[in-house]
Length: 344
Image (cartoon, rainbow, N blue to C red):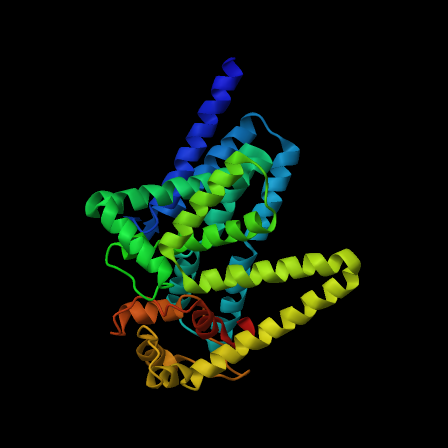
């Protein structure tokens, strides 16, 4: 009985920290450096799980959690190594390097989240991925409830319906407050898995409905399109693999090459002012033409373009440029400018 109470208390503690990690996305602690609460809470998760491991170690689960945390850290490792190479080749000063590393390891820090996810896996085992989803949903719903409390349920529902029926063509002032982009993409990954591997379970169904609601409240069109493509491709591969696994593997290789070519071509189109042509054709690009023109001087579309190092573009936009935005709102272009042709 006592052990069950302790286990529930432990689960409640870790879930509370996880919810706060996802709820306080933009708030930060000013200690000379701006350390966001989300990273602090992720490290609290890791530290707490480490203490439990030291007190009563589960070696097998600990190894699995550590291995997964290392896998989650690979993107940060790659961007850091590429950036160090760029800085070495360009012989930049120490200030540029420290600024880039602080951007990478303090603000856009995937390492703390990798450690936090490893902590949840260690504490909850394979159910950790679902506890993580529950934490995301609780945080997101709390944000939406706050928006509703300030503006009224009827107004929120009205704008939500308009948002969905116009495919985000019309976005009201109220619903835009519920556009939690960071959580939307997290939920998108879960939705792909849940729709690809459906489960006849009431808890699964509730999580799916809540995930869809929170995801649609943010309504990232690019994410919706990505989910649709991923599901079509996933079911196509599953169908082909039933008859010939080698063909399915070849298809994966082919589509990977196609995606790489398309991503490179996308940067080329931006460099050739394709978005300006869209504006002239009467298509609203939401200010992207002005933003892309402003950052055009920072890159060349060429295999010889090494890049500027991680954090470069964000620093330029926030410090020297007056374009009314703090980011380029295009992760592909951001990575190309920061990491160069081959790093991208």
